[in-house]
Image 1 (cartoon, rainbow, N blue to C red):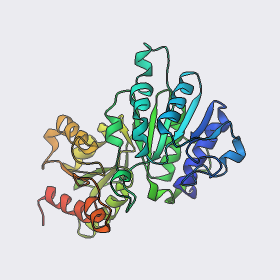
Image 2: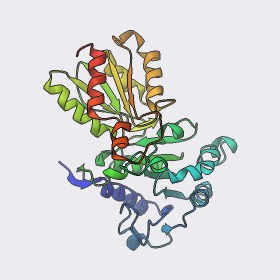
Image 3: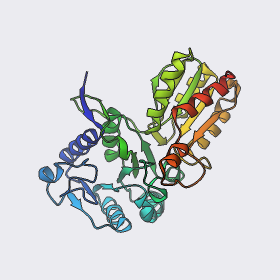
Image 4: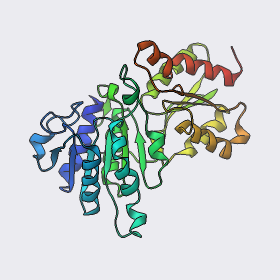
Length: 327
């Protein structure tokens, strides 16, 4: 049994352990130092590591992302925190055109070992420009690895793996789940990038999801179990590279798939999962793959819009029953 700590504490421990191990690792971003981070993920890190390794930046995402890319190309290992991935759209030129392409543009001469991290997705009444999920945007770009997880144990292990990775890694978190608690071991460990995990085994249907939609799925799975429906729940953890093998092995058992994804439906993470499943597991499917996504529109401010926009347990339950052909 491990200690029970929050997601923000798990991320902090992971970053701090790697910073103690390697003096080339440093953290930079908006309010990460004096203010201890917008979500207090970096609380106390300035006191331990000092202002040369925990660096407050201006509100200029394109600028400090570019500084991070240059530092990575010159032998350092930056962790760049965005207050939200919504703001990081401004920095996509550096992430997509420089960080992701450094290795190929230099014919293998330069690597770019950098971590970009921050919260993605909706966080309540934050309206259109602050409620977007960017996993599918980033995963579309060759050269980037994309991880998205809200389990404290896995979040710590994944941030450590991301920091030591020689390629750029985008860590997608959740603003509303930094306080989520979970068991985390005392000893050092790493969680491999590119490996999904089965959170609950089942026999009737496979449900695949990631990030805070896993909490939605857990509620749905518990309700389905009361009705005698056994759902297998898979947490992707990594969006790219996608662990399709774990999904296929589950479908060979359950023969049905529901994908729950906070992205907009067009060209989403669920779109890619559905495509790969029909490519590698078509003969095992007894029903069409069903997706639950956020609504195909920008998110309004009113609470009723937020509720209708996002996936919820009721939508997941209906989708599961549809692929099982039960009412």
